[in-house]
Each structure stands twice: as C-alpha cells, then as structure tokens.
Figure 1 (cartoon, one colour):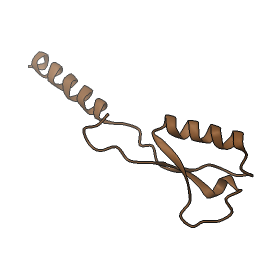
Figure 2 (cartoon, helix red, strand yellow):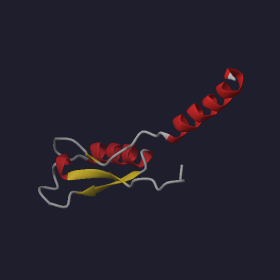
Figure 3 (cartoon, one colour):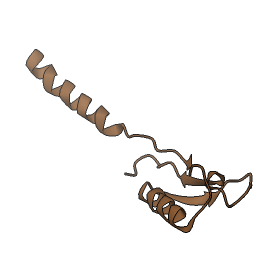
Length: 80
C-alpha cells in the first residue's frame, strides 16, 4: 500500500512546488537626485524583472528618484 501511495504523493508534492512562484511587485526607485547613470541602471534592472520605469501618479519633484517607480504587471495564470 505504501509503495503505491509514495509515487502519487511525490507527484502531488512536485506539482505543488512547481506552481509556486515568487511574487514580484512594483517598487520605488529609492532616494536621491536623478542622474542619467542612476536612471539608466534603474531602467535596466526594472526591465530585467519584467517592468518599466514611470513617474509616480502623485507627481512631485521629477529630479528625485523617489518620485519614480518600477511598475511590474502581475503575470496571468498559465503564463510563465
């Protein structure tokens, strides 16, 4: 009986683990004055995580990194 249940339990466990993914959320770019190099690095990092850099909705001083976010759209079920 155990020999027949063990493979089924293993398959179930592996299937559950494969369905769990780390959730990446949008985030603020940090603090400090915007420089060309800092913004370029932030855009590259954001793009590598599947997002894009944009100004925050509440406006603010566009010379400050904290007024920009990396917006990452949630993945739809079934997409990897």
